[in-house]
Image (cartoon, one colour):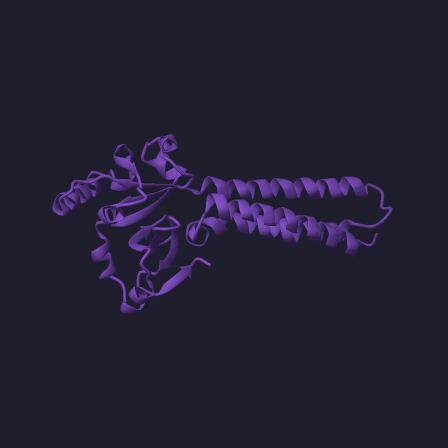
Length: 240
Protein backbone atom coordinates (compact mmCIF):
# COMPACT_ATOMS: atom_id res chain seq x y z
CA UNK A 1 0.00 0.00 0.00
CA UNK A 2 1.32 3.46 -0.89
CA UNK A 3 1.48 6.27 1.63
CA UNK A 4 -1.05 8.24 -0.38
CA UNK A 5 -3.56 5.41 -0.17
CA UNK A 6 -2.90 5.01 3.55
CA UNK A 7 -3.39 8.72 4.13
CA UNK A 8 -6.59 8.69 2.08
CA UNK A 9 -8.01 5.74 4.03
CA UNK A 10 -7.13 7.50 7.27
CA UNK A 11 -8.92 10.62 6.01
CA UNK A 12 -12.07 8.66 5.13
CA UNK A 13 -12.16 7.01 8.56
CA UNK A 14 -11.58 10.37 10.25
CA UNK A 15 -14.30 11.99 8.17
CA UNK A 16 -16.82 9.30 9.13
CA UNK A 17 -16.00 9.79 12.82
CA UNK A 18 -16.19 13.56 12.48
CA UNK A 19 -19.61 13.46 10.82
CA UNK A 20 -20.92 11.28 13.64
CA UNK A 21 -19.60 13.70 16.25
CA UNK A 22 -20.99 16.67 14.33
CA UNK A 23 -24.45 15.10 14.25
CA UNK A 24 -24.27 14.62 18.03
CA UNK A 25 -23.33 18.27 18.53
CA UNK A 26 -25.92 19.74 16.18
CA UNK A 27 -28.84 17.54 17.18
CA UNK A 28 -28.36 17.19 20.93
CA UNK A 29 -25.96 19.77 22.37
CA UNK A 30 -26.58 22.81 20.17
CA UNK A 31 -29.99 22.43 18.49
CA UNK A 32 -31.39 25.02 16.13
CA UNK A 33 -29.01 27.92 15.58
CA UNK A 34 -27.22 27.62 18.92
CA UNK A 35 -24.15 26.03 17.32
CA UNK A 36 -23.54 29.12 15.24
CA UNK A 37 -24.22 31.74 17.89
CA UNK A 38 -23.27 30.11 21.19
CA UNK A 39 -19.75 28.68 21.48
CA UNK A 40 -20.29 25.60 19.34
CA UNK A 41 -17.29 26.32 17.13
CA UNK A 42 -14.76 26.70 19.95
CA UNK A 43 -13.95 23.06 20.64
CA UNK A 44 -14.97 21.83 17.19
CA UNK A 45 -12.11 23.77 15.59
CA UNK A 46 -9.67 21.59 17.52
CA UNK A 47 -11.52 18.46 16.41
CA UNK A 48 -11.39 19.56 12.77
CA UNK A 49 -7.71 20.45 12.93
CA UNK A 50 -6.66 17.15 14.47
CA UNK A 51 -9.23 14.74 13.05
CA UNK A 52 -9.36 15.88 9.43
CA UNK A 53 -5.95 17.48 8.96
CA UNK A 54 -3.21 16.52 11.42
CA UNK A 55 -4.08 12.80 11.76
CA UNK A 56 -4.22 11.92 8.04
CA UNK A 57 -1.23 14.18 7.33
CA UNK A 58 0.91 12.42 9.93
CA UNK A 59 -0.06 9.05 8.45
CA UNK A 60 0.97 10.34 5.02
CA UNK A 61 4.35 11.42 6.38
CA UNK A 62 5.31 8.33 8.41
CA UNK A 63 3.74 5.56 6.33
CA UNK A 64 6.06 3.37 4.34
CA UNK A 65 5.18 -0.23 3.52
CA UNK A 66 7.50 -2.61 5.36
CA UNK A 67 8.98 0.14 7.54
CA UNK A 68 10.23 -1.19 10.93
CA UNK A 69 8.11 0.12 13.78
CA UNK A 70 5.34 1.27 11.46
CA UNK A 71 2.63 -0.23 13.65
CA UNK A 72 3.98 1.66 16.66
CA UNK A 73 4.07 4.93 14.72
CA UNK A 74 0.49 4.50 13.53
CA UNK A 75 -0.63 3.58 17.04
CA UNK A 76 0.95 6.77 18.41
CA UNK A 77 -0.82 8.83 15.73
CA UNK A 78 -4.15 7.17 16.54
CA UNK A 79 -3.66 7.79 20.28
CA UNK A 80 -2.69 11.43 19.70
CA UNK A 81 -5.66 11.94 17.42
CA UNK A 82 -8.12 10.30 19.82
CA UNK A 83 -6.80 12.31 22.78
CA UNK A 84 -7.10 15.64 20.96
CA UNK A 85 -10.57 14.74 19.70
CA UNK A 86 -11.62 13.89 23.23
CA UNK A 87 -10.35 17.24 24.50
CA UNK A 88 -12.15 19.10 21.72
CA UNK A 89 -15.40 17.25 22.34
CA UNK A 90 -15.10 17.87 26.07
CA UNK A 91 -14.78 21.62 25.42
CA UNK A 92 -17.88 21.55 23.23
CA UNK A 93 -19.79 19.44 25.76
CA UNK A 94 -18.79 21.45 28.84
CA UNK A 95 -19.70 24.77 27.20
CA UNK A 96 -23.00 23.57 25.77
CA UNK A 97 -26.06 25.50 26.95
CA UNK A 98 -27.95 23.67 29.67
CA UNK A 99 -30.89 26.06 29.65
CA UNK A 100 -32.47 28.77 27.55
CA UNK A 101 -33.97 31.00 30.21
CA UNK A 102 -36.57 33.59 29.27
CA UNK A 103 -36.42 36.40 31.82
CA UNK A 104 -39.08 39.00 30.99
CA UNK A 105 -37.99 40.07 27.48
CA UNK A 106 -34.66 38.25 27.07
CA UNK A 107 -33.54 34.70 26.38
CA UNK A 108 -30.32 33.85 28.23
CA UNK A 109 -28.19 30.90 27.17
CA UNK A 110 -26.76 29.44 30.37
CA UNK A 111 -24.11 26.74 30.67
CA UNK A 112 -22.87 24.74 33.65
CA UNK A 113 -20.06 27.18 34.49
CA UNK A 114 -22.52 30.04 34.86
CA UNK A 115 -24.72 28.02 37.21
CA UNK A 116 -21.72 27.32 39.41
CA UNK A 117 -20.54 30.92 39.18
CA UNK A 118 -23.79 32.06 40.78
CA UNK A 119 -23.75 29.14 43.23
CA UNK A 120 -26.74 27.45 41.67
CA UNK A 121 -27.08 23.70 41.18
CA UNK A 122 -27.56 22.89 37.47
CA UNK A 123 -29.25 19.62 38.49
CA UNK A 124 -32.35 21.67 39.23
CA UNK A 125 -32.99 21.44 35.49
CA UNK A 126 -33.45 17.68 35.69
CA UNK A 127 -36.96 18.25 36.98
CA UNK A 128 -38.06 20.04 33.81
CA UNK A 129 -39.47 18.20 30.78
CA UNK A 130 -37.78 17.91 27.42
CA UNK A 131 -34.20 17.45 26.32
CA UNK A 132 -31.32 19.83 26.94
CA UNK A 133 -31.08 22.73 26.67
CA UNK A 134 -34.15 23.08 28.86
CA UNK A 135 -36.69 25.74 27.90
CA UNK A 136 -37.67 27.64 31.05
CA UNK A 137 -38.93 31.06 31.99
CA UNK A 138 -38.65 33.13 35.15
CA UNK A 139 -41.98 33.74 36.87
CA UNK A 140 -42.47 37.46 37.55
CA UNK A 141 -45.27 39.62 38.99
CA UNK A 142 -48.19 40.15 36.64
CA UNK A 143 -47.75 43.91 36.72
CA UNK A 144 -45.21 45.13 34.17
CA UNK A 145 -44.07 47.83 36.58
CA UNK A 146 -43.54 45.28 39.35
CA UNK A 147 -41.70 42.99 36.91
CA UNK A 148 -39.38 45.81 35.87
CA UNK A 149 -38.72 46.68 39.50
CA UNK A 150 -37.87 43.02 40.19
CA UNK A 151 -35.48 43.04 37.23
CA UNK A 152 -33.74 46.24 38.37
CA UNK A 153 -33.49 44.98 41.94
CA UNK A 154 -31.97 41.69 40.75
CA UNK A 155 -29.25 43.56 38.85
CA UNK A 156 -28.61 45.87 41.80
CA UNK A 157 -28.02 43.02 44.26
CA UNK A 158 -25.99 40.95 41.78
CA UNK A 159 -28.55 38.17 41.50
CA UNK A 160 -29.77 38.36 37.89
CA UNK A 161 -33.27 37.16 37.11
CA UNK A 162 -32.14 34.45 34.73
CA UNK A 163 -30.16 32.76 37.52
CA UNK A 164 -33.01 32.74 40.06
CA UNK A 165 -33.67 29.04 39.65
CA UNK A 166 -36.34 29.00 42.36
CA UNK A 167 -38.54 30.99 39.96
CA UNK A 168 -38.01 28.70 36.98
CA UNK A 169 -41.04 27.27 35.20
CA UNK A 170 -41.16 25.08 32.11
CA UNK A 171 -41.91 27.08 28.98
CA UNK A 172 -45.48 26.06 28.07
CA UNK A 173 -46.62 24.88 24.67
CA UNK A 174 -49.64 27.18 24.63
CA UNK A 175 -50.26 30.62 26.03
CA UNK A 176 -46.90 32.01 25.01
CA UNK A 177 -48.35 35.51 24.61
CA UNK A 178 -48.44 35.93 28.38
CA UNK A 179 -44.90 34.56 28.75
CA UNK A 180 -43.28 36.70 26.05
CA UNK A 181 -44.61 39.79 27.76
CA UNK A 182 -41.89 42.10 26.46
CA UNK A 183 -42.29 41.12 22.82
CA UNK A 184 -44.16 44.24 21.77
CA UNK A 185 -41.41 46.56 23.00
CA UNK A 186 -38.78 44.25 21.52
CA UNK A 187 -40.38 44.44 18.09
CA UNK A 188 -40.19 48.24 18.24
CA UNK A 189 -36.40 47.95 18.55
CA UNK A 190 -35.80 46.16 15.24
CA UNK A 191 -36.05 47.45 11.70
CA UNK A 192 -39.07 47.18 9.42
CA UNK A 193 -37.02 44.88 7.21
CA UNK A 194 -36.63 42.39 10.04
CA UNK A 195 -40.29 42.62 11.01
CA UNK A 196 -41.29 41.72 7.45
CA UNK A 197 -39.22 38.53 7.69
CA UNK A 198 -40.92 37.26 10.84
CA UNK A 199 -43.71 34.74 10.41
CA UNK A 200 -46.68 34.04 12.66
CA UNK A 201 -44.87 31.33 14.64
CA UNK A 202 -42.06 33.69 15.67
CA UNK A 203 -41.84 35.04 19.19
CA UNK A 204 -39.24 37.78 19.05
CA UNK A 205 -37.00 38.23 22.04
CA UNK A 206 -33.68 39.70 23.05
CA UNK A 207 -30.88 37.15 23.32
CA UNK A 208 -27.77 37.10 25.48
CA UNK A 209 -25.01 34.50 25.74
CA UNK A 210 -21.39 34.65 26.86
CA UNK A 211 -20.21 35.61 23.37
CA UNK A 212 -23.07 37.31 21.53
CA UNK A 213 -26.18 39.40 22.03
CA UNK A 214 -28.95 40.48 19.72
CA UNK A 215 -32.47 39.35 18.85
CA UNK A 216 -33.80 35.83 18.33
CA UNK A 217 -36.93 34.34 16.88
CA UNK A 218 -38.33 31.53 18.99
CA UNK A 219 -40.36 29.27 16.72
CA UNK A 220 -43.50 28.41 18.66
CA UNK A 221 -44.15 25.32 16.52
CA UNK A 222 -40.69 23.69 16.46
CA UNK A 223 -39.74 25.17 19.87
CA UNK A 224 -36.22 26.13 18.81
CA UNK A 225 -34.43 29.40 18.16
CA UNK A 226 -34.82 29.68 14.41
CA UNK A 227 -33.24 33.04 13.54
CA UNK A 228 -30.73 35.44 15.03
CA UNK A 229 -30.41 39.15 14.31
CA UNK A 230 -27.57 41.44 15.24
CA UNK A 231 -28.36 44.32 17.55
CA UNK A 232 -28.47 46.76 14.67
CA UNK A 233 -31.33 44.71 13.20
CA UNK A 234 -29.53 42.91 10.37
CA UNK A 235 -29.92 39.11 10.12
CA UNK A 236 -26.80 37.16 11.01
CA UNK A 237 -27.84 33.52 11.24
CA UNK A 238 -30.93 31.76 9.95
CA UNK A 239 -31.58 28.06 10.50
CA UNK A 240 -31.80 25.95 7.35
